[in-house]
Amino acid sequence: MDFQLQNKTVFVSGSYRGTGHTIAERFVSEGARVIVHGHNPDQLATLDLSPFAGSVVGDLGTQAGMAAVVDQIVKKYDTLDVLVNNYGIAMGGNLEQLSYEDWHAMYDHNLVSVAQLSAQLLPLLKQSSQGRIIHLGTIGSTRPNARMPHYYAAKGALANFTVSLAKTLKGTGITCNLVSPGLIRTPEVEARFTETAKKRGWGETFEQAEAILTETYFDNPLERFATRDDVAAAVLFLASAQAGFINAQNLRIDGGALDIV
Image 1 (cartoon, one colour):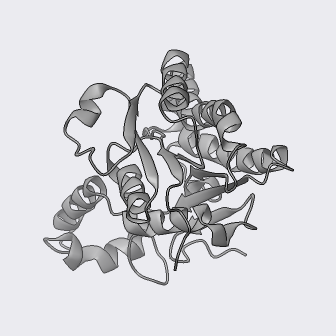
Image 2 (tube, rainbow, N blue to C red):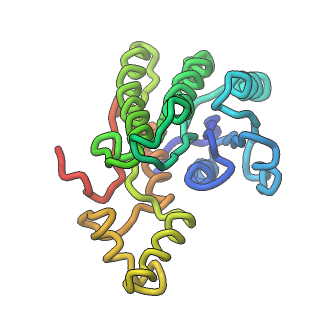
């Protein structure tokens, strides 16, 4: 399938590592001009930046960092077709353990930063013939757990904001959607669950224990965790010309874990 992303300018926040980096690489493979992002120069220092159109640095959790990122994009590239709001944070904790600062931090990084970055880059996106805004969320925005209530509340607000922003953009041709994965098999997740499997006698490797790990922690009909490539594929499709009439949607990448319609 030709996603028609050749020479499109794409910015992926938090793309110096993890799922964000995989998303950035997939856009490059489709011929897009991709701008990668890190919060400080050290995060980009070890990356091979040659496949990318460039990089920007700034802490999106602060007003100064946000202003720096937007200024770099506007001055260096002067064009933007796709904004992927991948950046966010997660932090454990039960309700009684969480402080005011914990709640504010979770909303600042997972909602306010997304809203501000989207708003400040709208002038560039409005100039595009194929403008796309894609947020990264979680299936927990629909079905939250007891732990991490501040995280799920912020991501739930992000789902709400996605619809609001799509309506705000009426008449611009820009679409806005949310991609909500379940558990993603990142190296960190794999290491944590492999340790759990060893302690419970389910196997010595993630592969040996994946079936029972999935049934226990992320039960879904496809009987596996999501991969970063699964998430990246969904983001690419929503950015493509073929997805031009998909708008204000929450696309769950969960293998059917949420049995809702």
